[in-house]
Image (tube, rainbow, N blue to C red):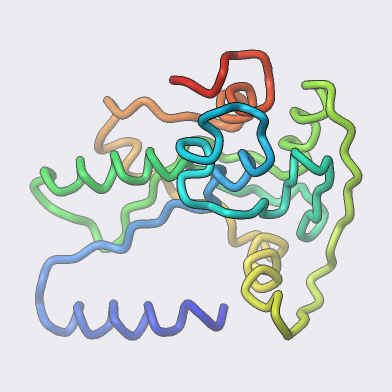
Length: 184
């Protein structure tokens, strides 16, 4: 993806410096899915700064799924990313890459879960074709998933098992289901 090349350059320079470093990998952030939720804390806590829906728009009952929808994708809540990064500071040694995730599943399974919650979903599948323009980042991220590049090796989950993560079911249940009012 175009926006990722600058990160690779920085990581190469850090590697050359001899400093200890890690590249945190978290996959797709699920907080986008709280967009449009009727719960009072959806904007503050559910979205956690994410101002629009990404791929799955539960509020508008649409999904624009990359590829076939059967490619594996790792999903993580932004709050869980923060907990892992804070915990990683206390680790003895950092690995070159440390991934984390709440759950690895497919977009088709996410849409199925949303439908099981009683919502209708209009689903569009996007091929691997690439487009330019204002949606370039969005389309490149979707293209990466369609190529099967959405799954993260969740090494931090193994190194810091005490962090209690939210998966797809819990996140959707809190913000769109009947599991509460969006409170933990």
